[in-house]
Every structure is written in structure tokens, then in C-alpha cells.
Length: 503
Image (tube, rainbow, N blue to C red; front, side, top):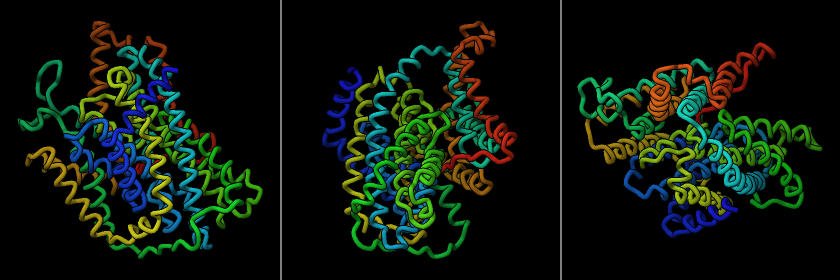
């Protein structure tokens, strides 16, 4: 009953006029960037971090969550009409959705994606509200050694889940951990890796790193790729509404996709890509007309889109309760919390319950807004696909630079923006994931703090790190995340599927 009371209080906060404006801006921006191929919610949230530095924390985080949900919605539009997924988690939607669009059924494809996203997002948000307090109750009993083991789990799962190999993920992670060492050591008061530059004594700003890696790095990568083949946009023919047969074939895939997406998204190494592929495979197996798959089966759109949006809510479970980001956007949202001096985790539910429950309640409002906006405004979203790439990425470059200078007016900050932007380009060029760098910078100092605290309590005895059953369990999960792909390869002779770095 306490959960429902807290959720009702959060709903009152989310319904405040200013917070409704933040939610509306978030879902509009999120849908727009989700529609645009290559411009994901992670990049958008990163761009807005320096701009929202002096805004209300609750409103800004509600806007970031709206961008996240909107990006998941919008990705289906580009997948269906352009056969170019706006998000890595929308790849499966393109398989059947674009075939439906070519057959003149783009409207029903967009409708089942939008309605399925609403159904899945609503159910998954209820699941988030119910599951989060239980996870918090467990996490409150953690000691310093347990928190350190939890950070190790975060490092290994993020390294294993992103990128094309665990080795590349770990390399990116260690870059972030090294950047996290810059600044003043809080225990000894000594400067570390500051190179006598006063601006570095406070460490590397997470917002500067995030904007540089995601915005500057992506822009340089697109410019270096040169001219691309012109993309053909499939027009939306006929009605955007579904007939009775479409409804009959869609509602079960919506529920099954939700059942797959939420629990997998809530896992430390979950994400949205795996449940969408699993949903597609399940619908193909259960479909009474399996020969339609590959030719425009509506189940192949309904199930994966529901799984995609349910996973988006699931990702917020480890982020809010444990402070573990399991997607690129979650990592940037973690940076958003930290820029307001907030650390997601069990204590956040105690120290800032209004903010947390207001954020969770706002997801219901964002879902409703997205359903109302997506179908009537589909013509406007389609026009966004025609924006020339030079204008789009040129605007991103200018906005990123001005936003960073506005938050931190310093030549050193501008120089770091350029250096980290070049780093982002090099990482993309050689297929290294971006998100682990941000995670390393954010969680590295926290892991060091918990490690030192545990060793101080035990008077320097490292055995304390392995005495807790909780810590041993988390270390075992970390080992499984690292060596799981190798075990999978040895057993099957095939490479294990890995997650993307887009959402």
C-alpha cells in the first residue's frame, strides 16, 4: 500500500504545470530524434545536460525520461518508412514494418507500433513502481564491500554488453576509469593527474565528456563517412488506423513482448536489443501464418516494439535502485543525476522520494502524450526525415559547443571538448563502444571510495572484500558477464550476440 501511496504522491508532482511542460518537451524531442537515423536519445540527453544545469532537477530528469521513451517510440517510424532504424533496438521492427509500408500498409504498422509501445510502457512502468521498492529494501543492507562488488558488476556488465567484444568494452571502460582519477584525492588532498592545470583539480566534467563523445564524436564520424546513398522514404498510404483483424493479431504480441522486455531490461546486462530479437523469434514461431514473416507480418512489428518499450522501463530499475546504467542513455541520465548532486541508489528513495516517485509517475504521462502525438502528427515526423545531413549535424556541433561553454565558460573546457570529441571519433572508427567511458568516469570514483572504506574498516585486510555472501554473488555474476560469451562460443561454436551502443 505504501508503494501506491508514494506513486499517488509522485503523480501529484508530475501533474504540476511546469513538470507537464518538461514532459511534453521531452517526448517531442525524443520522438524527433528517434525518427532521425543516427541521432539517438543518448546524444540528445547529452546535448541538453549543460543547458539544464541551472534548471529544476525534477523537471530536467522528467524531461530526460520523456526523451528516452520518445526515442523508443520514434525509432519505429524510421524503421517502418525508411528501413533505417533510428535506434539499434528498432532493427527488428524494420524487418516486417518496411515490408508493410511497401505494401501500402504503413499506417497500420505505425499504429500497432505506437499502441503496442503505449500498452507495454504502461504495464512496464507499473512493474517498475512495484519492483523498485523491493530492490531498494535489499540494497539498503549492503556494506562497503557489497557496494564495491556491485560497482565491479556494473563495470563488467557494461563492458560485456556494449560493443563487438568484451576486450573492446573493457578498453573503453579503463579509459573512463583513468579519467576518473583526475583531480584532488578526497582522502589525502593531493592532486592527481592535473598536470598543474587549475581547471583539472575538480576533475573532468561528466557533461563535457558526454557531449564530446556522443555529439562531437558522432558528427566527426558522419563527416568522415562521406556521402551516403540517397534514402527512399515510403509514403504513408491510406488510413493510419488498424482494422479488426489487425487488432486481433496484435494484442497478444503486445503482451508477450511486454513479458519479455521488462524483466530482461531490468537485468544488469539486459538492454532493449535482446528482448526485441527474442520477441520476433517467438512471434514467428507462434504465428498461424509463419509464411507471412519476411513479407510484412503485423505480429513482427507489434511484439518487438512492445518489447522495446517495456525494456526501456526495465532499464530504469537498476538505474534508480542500484545506480547501475545498462544502456548508453541510462549512463547519460546517471550523469544528469550527478550534476545535481544526486546519486541514484537505495538512499535516493529515502532522501529524495518526491523526485524519484515524481519521475516514475511522469512515465505514465509521457506514455499517454506519446500515443496522442505519434499518430496524428505522423506527417510531421516523416518531414523530419528529409532534413539534409549537413544542416542536422552542423546544428548539433554548434549547439554542443555553445551549451558546454554556457555551463563552463573556460578555454580549458573547450579544449577538453575538442580532445574528447576526437577520442569519440577514434573509438567509433575502430569499433570501440562509447558508453563504458562515461560509466567509468561516473562510477570509478564511487568504486574507489567504497573500496577504501571497506579496507579502512578491516584495517587494510583485503579478505573483507570476499567475506560477504552478497559480494561473492555479485563477483560470480561479474565473472559470468565476462566469460559468458567465451563459454557460449565453446558450447555452440558461435559468437554470442552483443548489445548496441545507441539507446
